[in-house]
Image (cartoon, rainbow, N blue to C red; front, side):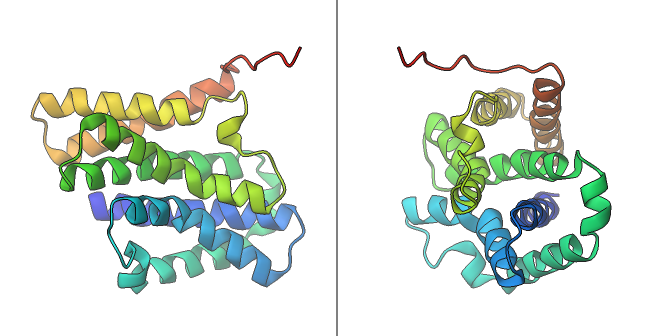
Length: 200
């Protein structure tokens, strides 16, 4: 289950990055680079911080193949995705839920405090998108009023609460990812946001 979620998250973020890059009218090479950094940017930063080098995608080419596949699918079906305004958001949301879990688990494997694990989960989920948005000349979603990183933190808290109940790992991963994805969908539907600071 965990490995399957990892692959789904990688492809989801790769497609999210590719669709964003195409919306910005980048050439195919530019689209691929944006897809790649969106998919592995957060995980790369996480692995460097915890001293896990070479980073994950350098040791397992399966991730590279999945990113290439996500890139190709985004190219081939771009017109259909353009018609579905929610497609980019949905891919991003799936990636958000899955990558939060991956960061949490990585922190647990390294014996880190739950608060640090939650920070790693948030970083894994969000920083690929931060790099994507910066390269596409956008203010990163994580820094705007839209609830984004806060959802990852909430998901991390839910994860550790459920872990105390000694649930089966597959159930734990599934419930946590569903919570993150559901709250993200509700946040957008009901326009939940954090109040921005007044510059005056």
